[in-house]
Every structure is written in structure tokens, then in C-alpha cells.
Length: 220
Image (tube, rainbow, N blue to C red; front, side):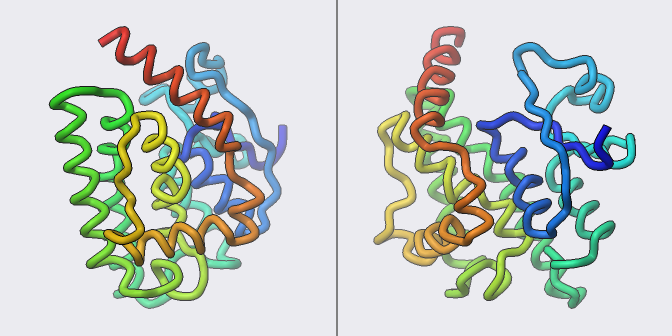
């Protein structure tokens, strides 16, 4: 067994959060692809509470939940820090991470619903994007300034997955003229070398999320 294992699944932005952090910090690891429709005994052993990915296993000890894993990586491997050293700036970063954790799920509600429920989720997503545009970025290249940090990693779902959801449901939300700062951040984030080399294939994602939406609506 490798000293560090990442148990994840390829279409998940939460898996990619951890993968990006490992790459940015230069930490060697072994990746284990999990099938969430046929969960492995190891996944159930490592995360018996929520039974989901990602799980980071370090020296045989499992750490669950993507944001908790990011914080663990930053504390255990201080090189290339993902959070600011200044206590106030670190608190602000944690605030915006909490914001996307609380508000981000509306993107997935847009994907898996239709009718009035979807309309509400679209409204919630637009309100979230407006708040990020007006309050979080402040014209910076990345959320924390000139380099990618933990907030950027947490917001990766907006950079790559939101566009796929928009195409699948046929609703455009992240309009460049409405959200110029956020749109520019998306471009900067996805063009960063570590990120651009470690993104799931867009065409494969479209197929996957189209099929997933059809199944979810059929079973609703």
C-alpha cells in the first residue's frame, strides 16, 4: 500500500479538489478509482459514516470530506501553502470556502430537477454567482491574489463543472457580461498548468451528466 492513497471518482469535483492540492504541493500519491454504484469494501471501511468519496488514506489512516482533507494536507505538508499565513486572511478564505460548501449544491439541483424546482435552483445559483462576483474576487487573478489557493480549489466546480451542467440542461448562468470577474477567474484557473493538465475530459463529462440527468428525472 502506498503511503498516500486518494480514493475518488473521475466525474467528481470533490475528488479533483484533493488531486489538485496534492499536485500543487508536489505530494506523491496513488489514485484509486471508486465505483459509487458498487462501493468497494475499502471505501465502506474508510468512510463508514457517509460512504462517499473522496477519502485520503495517509499511512493507513483515512481522512474524509474534501475540505477537511485540504486542511489536513496544508497542515501536514506546509510547502506551497494553500491558506494564507495571516490569521485574518486565513479566516476570510475559510469564510468563502464555507460559502461555496453551503451554496454550491444549487448547481447540482439545477442538474437533477425540472420545472419549478429547477427554476428555484437556477435563481439560487445566480444569486450565489452574483455574491461571488461582487464580494469575493475584488478584481484579483485568483481569490487570494496571484497564486492558486484553497479557495480557488474549492470553487473548481464553477470553473469546469458548471459549464457542463449548463449545456446538459440548456440554461446559461455564468454569462461573461453579467459576471466579468468570475468569468475571468474561470479562464485563469483552468489555464494554470497544474489545473489544465488535471481536468476531466469535457466530452466524457457531457455524456456522463446527460445520462445521469435522464436517470434521475426518470426515477423522480
